[in-house]
Image (cartoon, rainbow, N blue to C red):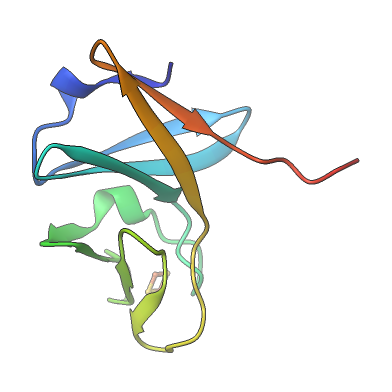
Length: 102
Ligand code: FES
């Protein structure tokens, strides 16, 4: 469990770490999405950015990503931040990270 859904109101984001991996959680209308917190530009903290609808804008230089897919919208299209599977059980949020084989 990484967070309680009560602590992430709809339209807001929340920062968590899983074994040191920075992850942003976003509540879109009651559904939680998880994606990499580090912007692909220079590592800006996306969970401290601006969430409008289903897009998040980096607070440092304005790159924008689709929350559901992690794909960059502005600019440059074609890159993405990772996304992670989320499940919510009895208000507890669980995120699955597929670590690469060692
Ligand atoms: S670090 Fe995110 S836009 Fe530059």
